[in-house]
Image (cartoon, rainbow, N blue to C red; front, side):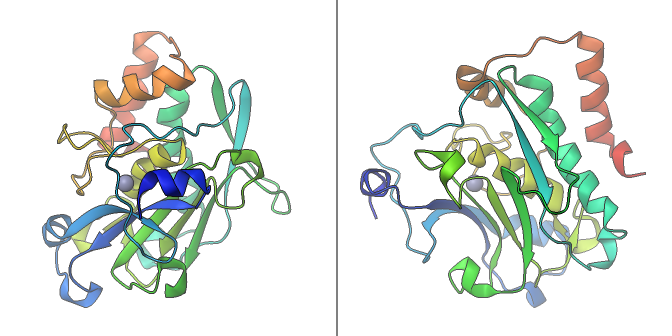
Length: 244
Ligand SMILES: [Zn+2]
């Protein structure tokens, strides 16, 4: 489908992280990284042709605090206790919070409350267009993201075995979250910079490069914090201190 058509009809568009081999044939993290790509599709699995549109036009309104929450939890052994999965969300959002000025994020702690950004584990392959090679997916924002059931929704395939950093062959949750959040805010892939968090192949990168920052700053504003605070948070992320 042409992306202009999808946009005109406000068709939900998502980025799917897809492996080129089935889960039981992937034995190591390197193997996984070499066989994973990110693809834009419709919910039904039809590929979206990005030609023509350089920039995703829909964004979230400014000057708001957006909430996020886990809708449920995975029972994968490397993600226990469940609070570790909440921590992964906090860590993924923290970098966005660190750099963005006109939108803020807050973890929703009330189990009965809804949230703007929702993370759902599922074994249901229908959610992934019936493709068991999909590891996870996120929807790009609709024209009116605050009144769309798909905007801000990130879904993860729990048929795979997950770990926070993807050590020992488990799929890498934190990279998936940081990559997909970038789309959730209304951005395409960066096909030019190999180290970008939205490079369309799994590259293991968690930290925004300058071009990533400039893209989100252009819409959501640049937050200026003392350098030592920024350095400290980035260092924690790189070294995995948040999960000790
Ligand atoms: Zn993507």
